[in-house]
Structures are given as C-alpha cells and as structure tokens.
Figure: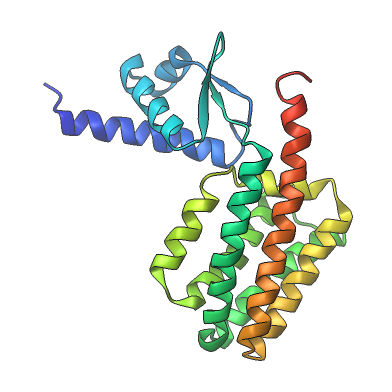
Length: 229
C-alpha cells in the first residue's frame, strides 16, 4: 500500500523532471503538456501527473488554458521586466559584497566563463548550451563570492521563474547585445579585481537591467506569435 509520503515524493519527482525539461528548453514555451502522454512516459497513472502539473502551475511555469489543458506558460512582458528589476538590485548587492570577498581563483573562473561567451561572439566556438552554462556560471560565481546564502537563494528563485535557455535564444539573434553582454562582464570583472564595491554594484545593476529589457522585448515578440504564429 502506497503511503501519502510516497505519493508526495512521486509527485515532487515528476514535477522536478518536468520543471527541468521546461528550464532547459526541451519543453518550449507554448508547448501543451498532455497528462496521458506524460503518465505513459513516466510509467505512472494520471493522478500524480495531474498533481505535478498543479504544482508547476502554482509555481508559474505552466498555465491551464481552455480547450488546450496544461501549457508551458509564456510570461507577460511586464512580469519579466519587474522580475529583472528585483534581480538587478539583488545581484548588484551580491557584486558589492563580492568586491570585498572575491578570491583570485574566483576572478580567474569569471574570466574563463566570459572567454566562452567571447569566443562564441567571435565565431570561434561555443553552442547555445555552452553559452547558457557559461553565462549562468558567471553569475553564480559572483553570488558565491558574495557569501550570503539568503541572497543566493532569492536570486535563484527569480531565475527559476523563467526557462534558462530563453536568454540564450534572445541573445542568439542579436549580435550587438551579445557583444554588450561580454563587455559588461568585462567591466564588472575589472571593478571586482580593483575591489571597487561602488563600481561593481553599478556595473552589475546596469548589466541585469539591460538583460531584462532585452529579454522583455523578446517575450513581447514571442507572446504575439507563440499561439497564433
């Protein structure tokens, strides 16, 4: 006989597996999520799948639409902008704290990650998965250097509200913004290397706000076509 604890763990596991596929882009925004197909894939009944989808709906990753059922949600552009306004302040604080705490090895790690992005801009390698990972790791290192787990968790919570591959998709079609992304990373690294907390804070704030505006514009275009295009 299956206990409630076991059932809850199964629902959490299914939700986590679906969430991972949404976040890495395997299940793109606008994609219908069929309960029967998911149940067959995971080898379970529809009940835990239905509960997992409800969990993801409460987290804002999917929505229920008439005649379509569960669909990977397209965030409203204003939600993206507001989320990035908050993220900008949190990551700016992380950069400010990191300026006093970052180690030489962490600075070297930042350079390695940004070199992956630079190589991709220059056409010297680096696919979408590599650049997404490098960009995420760059920001993660800054948060780690800030040495404040509460701050890191709050930043992670915002990042987990949007599929992580979308930023790369938005950057992929905009050479100018890809170059800007690398330059802004360079400016932040220089401020951190100089232990200039004020400059690091402002560089990170400007960088995240810029990324948020670019991503907001991408979602505005996408929201007009994902269900009608």
